[in-house]
Image 1: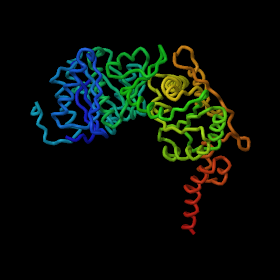
Image 2: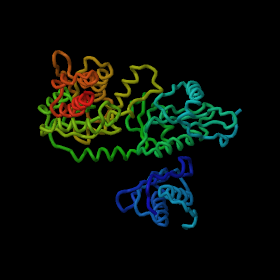
Image 3: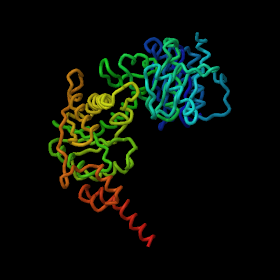
Length: 98
Length: 355
């Protein structure tokens, strides 16, 4: 999946996460995570985001994640939605990825 | 009695919708002791759908969040963060990479929940916050590639609309006194001459000075982002606090990344805003209550031509009055040859056609 424009999903509310995916000029995922549970779950959040992007076939993107203590399934859903929006993909099959 | 929080609908209001709802928003803000800012083009409004009674709003002027207010009875309900989500999404969707806001110092905690962090603060007075501090890092990194060694590193921030002998004189003086001089061009594209044109003319106008480096401006150095309007009542206060924030941004972020220790400005005999800016710069670049390294401010007497200070506004006035020939004494060759191409030739071509 190619990231063509900025895609946003999620909210700043508690137990949610806001994901912003931007196009990137090199073939890598640049991931920036800010989380209020960074110390406890920072690496787990990063893994979830990276795995989800990989399943979506995203190989080049700048990803900004603002986490308010979201569960894994929420993070996954928000990353998927943001990626689809960023790619202009029309045939979305949410949930098929897992 | 208010209904359930979930009943509140949040909508984006702009264009003709905004004109229709403007009075309601003005009244709502007034009840919260705030004034509407006419620069705001988009509002996020929280209201009850049945009677459209407004309970929260936040406005966006380009990439600056303004006019944020939540009904007193609804505070602490989580409505604020819904409002924050929508305004951030709106700003980011418009393509802005960073968002800014000014707030009373005591309210900065609220915006922490929106993901905003203070860039600079005047304790107990005002906080200047942004959403994506990495953008500032990128800008500072780009500046650092021009880092130069020396004991006296000067700096000048100019709009150069257009570059005149006045600017040239200021740069020359700094160039003589300093090991290196960093010149920053105001990025904002709201001037008579476009940013690209101004940049080209500054670069050409100082190209013979070997110790002068010209830098592109950004949102973080004299920009519309540094002008608060809505919670400040007096006109003088608006300018003083805005320029204080700008001075503190310069002192805390820009200057250290290039080891700048002195800033040059021209004396300002006429324009009150600029004169005030110089006073505030002098105060906040040196104020001891901030831990960042102090910056010396050096005022250079304006260069004059026929007893009047050479200024860009004088040049623009001559252009408007079609007195092109008189401009030749006020600007460097590079600027004149550009203006000549743009105005004089055009006029001559035009008059040929008319004949």
